[in-house]
Image 1 (cartoon, rainbow, N blue to C red):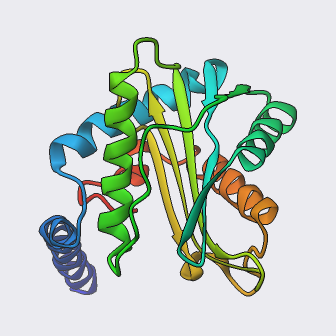
Image 2 (tube, rainbow, N blue to C red; image 1 turned 135 degrees about the vertical axis):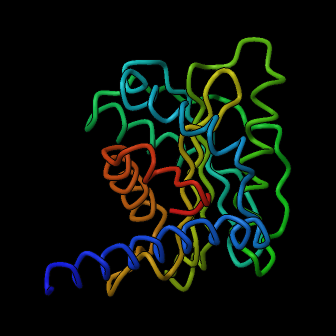
Image 3 (spheres, rainbow, N blue to C red; image 1 turned 30 degrees about the horizontal axis):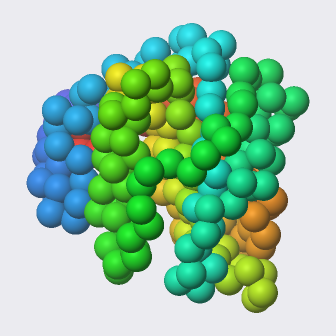
Length: 212
């Protein structure tokens, strides 16, 4: 009887979790989550990135650093990301030598919607290039430079077809008791998180409801 009760409880729990997962998608969409079709495409691109992407060309664009609402393209930050990816992780990373043609837009209160719209904008721009890199890397850092505080960061990796195998949204909820305070620390944080998430199954990196 005890075993039967446990089986029933387990079944109910499984149904509850499945229902929650199904409900998460429309909820995520209402807050700016990606469409199911986009999630499936990006999930497939993520698998390719896992298997062979680290051996391909990686072109890194200047970072978009937003200092208390004032944006600027930081070539030195992009170069630093190149150095870390190349020297510490063996990627074939090179600097783009130009800013991407994706104008800055202020981030509203809804970071998820902003993040996904920016991901789409970078991907659309890559698709317009005559000879896009195998992988293009874009980075955004929202911070108070003088105050030594990072508020949010985004990392986007776009393949030559304009798919988005990897995009990363972080804010104070992800930084823990010792948040990154400088651009250097922010870059190091994003790279660590990238390689950690690259080890996840594709279904966890790109869950059906679009938020990981």
